[in-house]
Length: 237
Image (cartoon, rainbow, N blue to C red; front, side, top):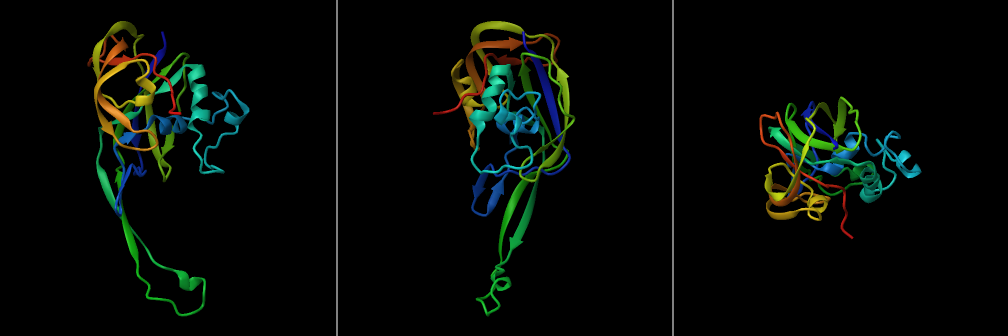
């Protein structure tokens, strides 16, 4: 049976990434994508988990190109039996920041320019002290960093980890999973019956998922937790 960890993440800075753009408003959804969590937890660029030379040289703070390499970076985690679910907000608040910029062409050419008309935008961010929760499934025991950074501003967040009791594998039947899931990672091994969609790049997520398939259950927890089995990173062709 795998090791399964329940991870709680608490923000110590405001978190920003553009889930959606509505005119001049750039909004951050209170959901953390599982791709982003893999990078933040150091599962991608750490030599401890790397299986290829390209993985060992993967970036941490600098990306030489603007081309995502999700399939190349995440496939080695399948080979190691490591999977991270997306994170849902346990509780959160939002803050709205307004930014402005102006036309500074006069700094380039020393001649009269047209009227300087400023522009502006708003960013809806997740406030500090907001908390998120997600799960990590691993074929081997893992050690997690206490502090990670997330989002466009590399916001600081604290990670607390609790290993769950050894899971029990249940036969195929219908169950509900209230946490967000990556549909590409779950639909090939489970029959998804109904769900709510969370539109966000690079792959929209689903939540409140009713499905039929095998799942892990746990004894001794305060709540009923049924976690889908055989989730792994898959990519659309």
